[in-house]
Amino acid sequence: MTVTTGHRRLLVRAAAVVFATGVAVLGFAGPASAHVTVNPSEATQGGYAALTFRVPNEEAAASTTKLEVVLPSDNPIASVSVKPVPGWKIETTTSKLPKPITTDDGQLTEAISKITWTATAPANAIAPNQFQEFSISVGPLPETDKLVFKVLQTYSNGEVARWIEEQTGSEEPKNPAPTLTLTKGSGDGDHHDAAKTDTSEAASASSTSGSESGNGLAIGLGVAGLVAGVAGLIAGLLALRRSTAS
Image (cartoon, rainbow, N blue to C red; front, side, top):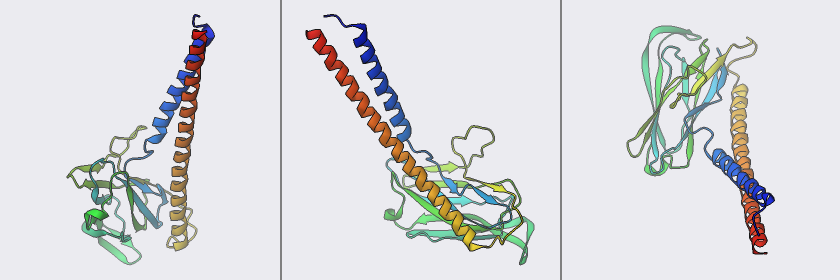
């Protein structure tokens, strides 16, 4: 018995489902953001903010042993404090400002220009398929539209990932630097309000958790679709075989 047009359509349809769902699974399975990012991505000019640098490990056979975050020198931040990370040593570099800035405590001629985190033992480094978060508290934030933090990520094999490129167009660069967008404040409230900082940090964590959950759900649905597609293809082949045999 010859293969009918209906049989061909069935096989083509099943194959198309398998192909489409396979592409979807591969697309969702990849990390949504494999580079170093700063969270939250937006804060208020003149205010204080708790910033977290999220650092994923992209090497398959090496661990991240050191992270260097360079604070922008063109828009210095008067107050910078660093949250301890268990198993990591923290070093800060202070530089003389090209132009003094005025703070509530008077003229400031020096400010922290770089923060370095170094794993104190190999077991504390960021292993493949893992990430770590490094947090700082900064303020008052300067009156500018954004702050660009250049970051160097050093691996145990000697490789250094340089997240230093600033986005200038619509397309994201290959090695983007973490960027904090700054918006004008309303002028109401106390910028030192710790409750506001905690709320911002909690909202960032909630957003991250929701994003990760969404990615997990998408992967699950993609796998389910792929299984269904394969089942359909098998069913089509069996039907074709039975028809040919008869």
